[in-house]
Length: 128
Image (cartoon, rainbow, N blue to C red; front, side, top):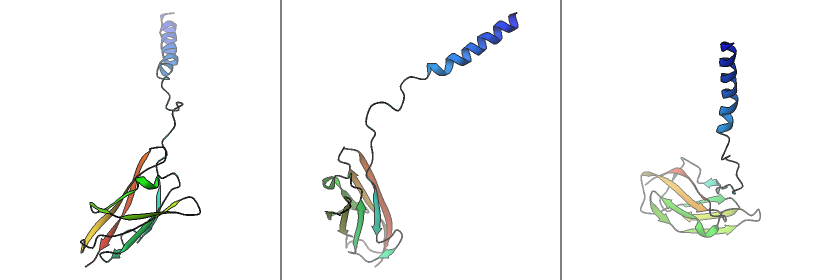
């Protein structure tokens, strides 16, 4: 009889334990954050370019055009943002002429219209 009681207690505890952790589901009513996406990088990743060359990329339609910031190896870059027919954004800029004979990351930082922050970028080689 004692063995049955021990088995029953263990069985009941096994049933109760998972239910104790069932609060605070991650699927709450709060809106999820959908980060901006960046694609169509030109020049392509790991390609070799000259100083002062033009670069471009596309940003997803949910990106706030006024929030897009681009740096190249830590140097802020002036950009031009235009809307495409598809709703996405076309971003164009120039690489700093002061960078040569080095690898540089074109880093992108932007927010969505719902204030979700996201980033991206790609690596290029800048020749002499």
